[in-house]
Amino acid sequence: MRMKSSKEKSMSQATTPDLNAMTCAKIFIQRDYTDGTMVRFQTHFPQELEGKIERQVYEYTINQMNVYFQEAESVSCKSYCEGCMACLTAYFVYLCAETHYEKCLKKVAKFIAEQNENVFLPRALMLVNPAERGLRVIEIAILDQPIVPRN
Image 1 (cartoon, rainbow, N blue to C red):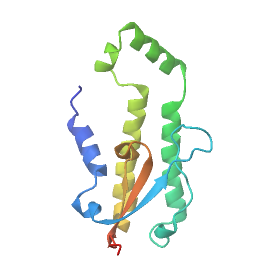
Image 2: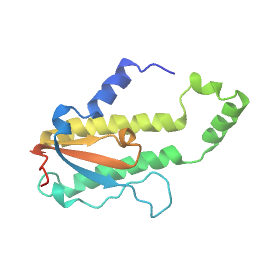
Image 3: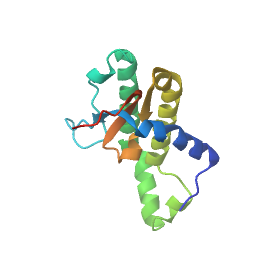
Image 4: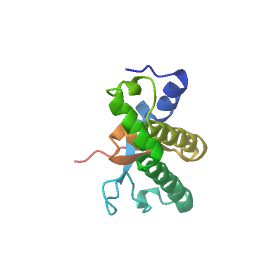
């Protein structure tokens, strides 16, 4: 298993929820399966975010993440050769080289860290990397809204 560099660790920490994020309200943006099983998230604007973030900023963020995931799942000559090389080396090539998919996931993590720093955290929101949730949902924590206990 490959060790994470300090840059990867800091990127991971920038999207990992802290204790404050664990005790606050959360919004979950579900996957969009209308075009098949490729990783794509719904772009509708949640009513819980009304007044907290502009609709255009939210839509830009989700659409850009969808573009990165579309790039990750695209089939190209490079990805085909990558697969052939993996087979020829009994997948040992993956011990010393990153896959195209891993590179795209790093782009997503970097984008989320930038969006959190510049857009979401100043508005008391935090975007959690969907890779940390098994690519099932995008979690948005509302940091200034505590969890309301149910009776």
